[in-house]
Image 1 (tube, rainbow, N blue to C red):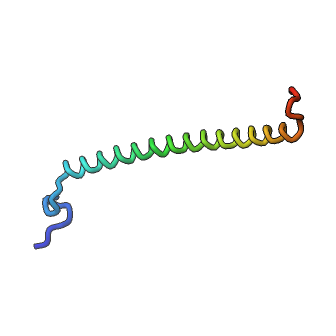
Image 2 (image 1 turned 180 degrees about the vertical axis):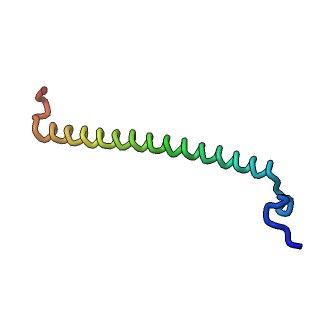
Image 3 (image 1 turned 120 degrees about the horizontal axis):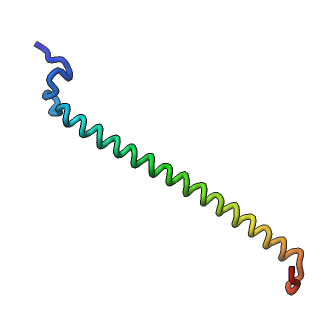
Length: 74
């Protein structure tokens, strides 16, 4: 007589407690990955701002060098 899948839970070596523990660990891993993704997005945004700021500063510096004499004060 065939045994229905999940009827006993012992055929595959795992019981309800084991599945609950695995689910809990997977939830924790998912939560950690979500947190890392948020931190990565935050860092990416800050680095993007820094890159744009540095690019703007570089352009301003090049304009000053091209427009003003070397010993002129602003």
